[in-house]
Length: 142
Image 1: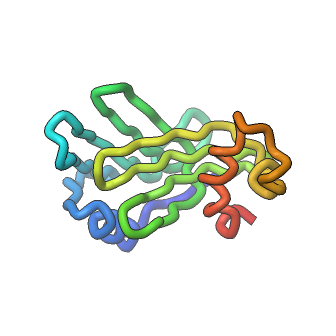
Image 2 (image 1 turned 90 degrees about the vertical axis):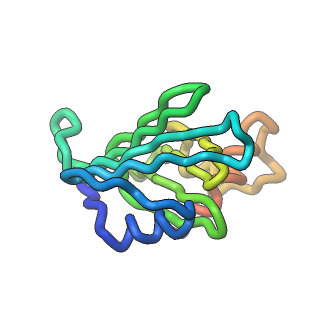
Image 3 (image 1 turned 180 degrees about the vertical axis):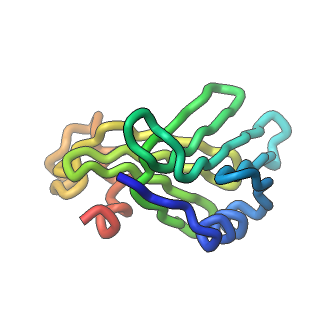
């Protein structure tokens, strides 16, 4: 699963998050600061790297609350006005890392794609949030 990050994707991320990336070889890093002084985030995208047996892209995020990584990105969605969604889709399961311009970060991991396509009124409340949040990715994962 190889997804190469193009310059147009980097420019769109800059626009959505209202900041500029620092570029290194096949790597881009953003430092975000929220209007709230205590919220800061640094995240990086690595393109075309060895992910342990496959070449692909990954994103890493560091906040004051934790460190998150998503390996093997298969696509990126821009949810305007202020979020970028990184997706890993293996046709059965979906994992997403969502980054917002105000330093929000959500990670959904190993969500069954069938769940996203379900009738939300029939879902257990514990899985309703992930199904609703990730339903916006449905067109890009089919």
